[in-house]
Image (spheres, rainbow, N blue to C red):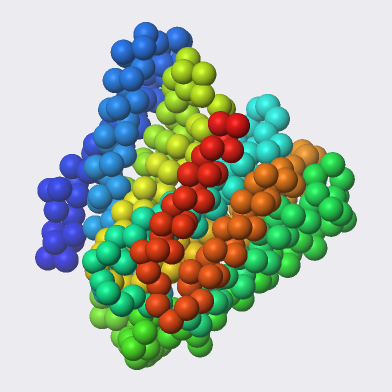
Length: 372
């Protein structure tokens, strides 16, 4: 009971009630919100939703930091990453299984997430960390493992369908082996990351913290706390994602009135969905934990691609839907430049604010192409 009371504090309960209460209110007000709203009312509703999301985001960050402190890396950050990514994958799958044609939703979502994580979030983190600390470095072996998977997964997801597929989509004969191989690669990566190679994903000089016996002891001694904090984290993440997607229609309406491009809506929603992870990443960089920054950013993208692509390919195979994955030439250039810049940024003995500024510029360029 003492453990439960220490976790389910008044602040935590208020956040949960606020998040789920806001989602229930949006759900009940669905018929009213579906009708065209006056500009001020639309702005007020969007502002209220964003405010609730920010409050919940800080709750997610708090629980994630408690878990990371208790479990150590990479286990603590993995819980946060998988919580957000799995919910995002489920929602993308739900949209595909719903009415209408959504041939490019997976491609557009993953592309937006890639640019946001690899350039915006990493850029801000490196800028904040580099200005505050004179010397920052990540575990080169862990970063290299992430980037190796990202090269293979992104090429398979976005480059190859346009070269060997049918109209930018994999044929069924191609989709099946791609689906299976992607899952096997991602599963093997998780097995090694949480097992024999766990030390590769800890801060340099802290390899002993990742030892398996210590993790087993922590799980045995603090099982109730860990399970309850994980449950609270997921329960706080869910309203964020659900509200983000519920406000998509309102955001589309507002951007349409402003004459903004349709793609901007997806980018803004992706930024909101990954807000908790962004806050956690920046705080890690502020504290000089550069490997944790890599675990959160690179690990999140590996999980996003490694889970989203198999999920949408499977849905396409079972429902007969076309899953268009081939990216436009402009986005392929930006994706290639992002990967080259990421390798250059983390290949040196230290990372710096200069690299962060380059990532931020590339994100701004991506934004310009959206409006082009």
